[in-house]
Amino acid sequence: MQTLEFKNYELAPIANFLGELKLKARASRGRSKLFKLIFDKNKEYNEELDDVRKAYYETDGNGNFKMENGDRVLKKGGDVGKLNAELQEVMNEKAVINCTEYLEKFNALYQELLDYPYELDNQTALIYDLLMDELEKLENEGN
Image (cartoon, rainbow, N blue to C red):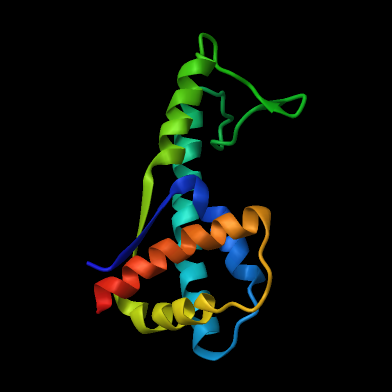
């Protein structure tokens, strides 16, 4: 199966990076499709984080976190160390994105990004490298 794999915590920075790219035609369409898939995965990830948090923080009758001084209210006996460990585990889980349906568009995005004419620096360059590694694997699987 042709997939892209990222860690959950990488999803939002990749989506933000995709949104900033200057692309045309098929590459832009590939970006849009990938952005939507990443957005959906990131939504699932945030829901998982909230599920973990609900075991440690108090909630009201509507399931919303109770807040005090801008912070969530920890349940009595709540162990912040365990909470952080569980959150870290979810953050590092793989988010697998099935690419079969949009393979041609993702290949066009990859080809366009190979010679991307704009300068990338610092965090943007790292995200570019991460994305390109995954798109390259996808491109190689297709050949």
